[in-house]
Image 1 (cartoon, rainbow, N blue to C red):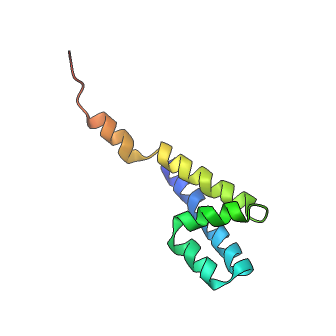
Image 2: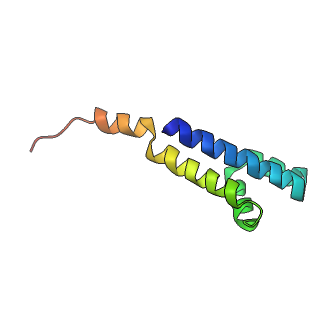
Length: 83
């Protein structure tokens, strides 16, 4: 599931970056490519044009965070304390 979330976030981010390049030029596309926070800002600012890619991006991030394999390994490696 982590892999699926990562792919969804990547597809959404690339889609938003392409839309930014088409509508606002190269500078907006570069910002979307480099900074994830600008991708979120641009998706909210232009929600009418970026509804599907923005939802894909956010859903992918949520799935990747929830099903992060490192988080489950950390909780499994913590020894149980007996009181």
